[in-house]
Amino acid sequence: MKSAVIVFPGSNREGDVLRALKSAGSQAEKVWHAETELPKGTDLVVLPGGFSYGDYLRCGAIAGRATVMDAVRAHAARGGLVLGICNGFQILCESGLLPGILMRNANLKFICHRQFLRVERNDTAFTRNYAKGQAIDVCVAHGEGNYTADEETLKRLEGDGLVAFRYADAQGHITQDANRNGSMNSIAGIYSDKLNVLGMMPHPENLIEDLVGGTDGRGLFESLVSSFPRAA
Amino acid sequence: MKARVTVTLKNGVLDPQGKAIEGALKSLGVEGIDGVRQGKVFDIELGTADKAQAEAQLKAACEKLLANTVIENYRVEIA
Picture 1 (cartoon, rainbow over the protein chains, first blue to last red):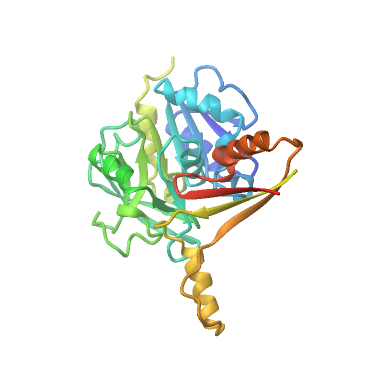
Picture 2: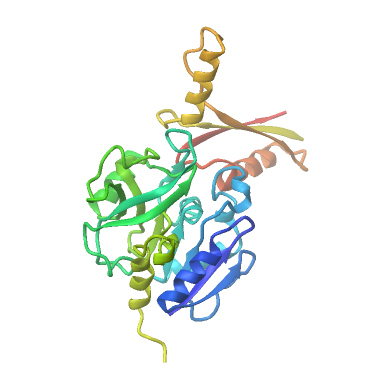
């Protein structure tokens, strides 16, 4: 499996994502935002976290219109996998690949803490190594993670099973307390209609080693790698 | 030609920053304020002298980048 991690000016989590992908068994390389094409044979595109373009205008707004995003849109339209984490999720929303927007956290604070997520479905390329309903222990670190969409979009996301993760407690219960950024329906991540694009605010790449306190994030990268036949 | 684009949040979209500013004004003792909504202003220089062309260019700028029309409205004023 071959992954391309897109780097924008101000991205800062590309190294962690590369490490997570490689340790799960993927080939992975960085791709600069000004490229017009993805490396040949790219299976997965990752938009990493950070503060692309200093969050100027709106988070992800300028990166969402970068040259490379045309190639990413074409990749997604072909059914290729795309994962956006944190700022990457904001970029996916701004680029039109996912609906809705990430607004300023309802409490106006930058939040940075360990966070349980409930896995809403495990029949996608991103979550097959998790159990449905499992509470996974990862991290959040963002100031604009308050998922907002109009009523119709929200209804469609819920009705079509496109909510990937919700903020939860350690038992997987969806509580008001667990939803620290104020997201509608406690949404932490969503899929595109064809389930090949995932955007999520939390950072699974932070929790891939016991050394740093947990490995629940590994499942996501291992799911992706196990979705592809092993390269010869 | 100069233009001003104003981008504001649509009605009904929660504006935590506006709320915080409203609270700060209250705590400063500024009276009579019932609500605050925060927006953005862009002062733009245009190369054209043709108003219709300027309007079309500004509309494109707003739709493509300056406003996220999921949550924001925009208003264009040409000087």
